[in-house]
Length: 273
Image (cartoon, rainbow, N blue to C red; front, side):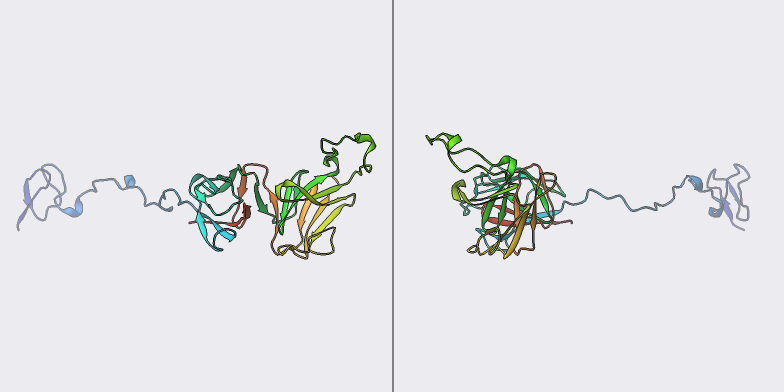
């Protein structure tokens, strides 16, 4: 019978032997102890494999109306980026835009308005009835409407009038709602000043009507004075929407929001990757 050498000390022994008579080590592979104790072998992982940072969402502005083709889209870069005639998102053909009109701050998943240097401001479309403050401006159709409550209606006659103010003019009412159409240059146009609780605006047959405005719906919006002294703006199913000027910053934008910047109407698209 052939011999077998001990793998530990090299001593030769008959092949039938299972262990070395000199060092006690096993002579065959089946008798070798595992090099690592079973208890020391870690179990296979049961959870998902670790992942790196999630990719940033795709955030862009889609043109609905304005100085460039409808449907054109523009990616908003990370960090701060401006919209204007000369800016990161540039629209040089829009005469209503300032050089830097609006400043975005974009994180991987969100988009905020953090600055509005442009004098004509930025307007966001209403998605639900919204409270506004006296002095806010609402855009509907092609009309800019300055909203005031009765406590904030201006009572001064322009300077340069020599007639004593206390003897001139009709006594001032104390209206609940005072809505003024703003014309080019900030001049006042049509005015509704009423002690009623609501003012309806539309193309025909309303408290404030604009029959020549092609973007104004027949029934467009309503202003309501609330019991708490606030003013609520309600879009009543108009086709082109009602917009309120953004005054409080930062203003978080959400997927599907529409904003009016100069003559450009954009829809915000946020697509997670």
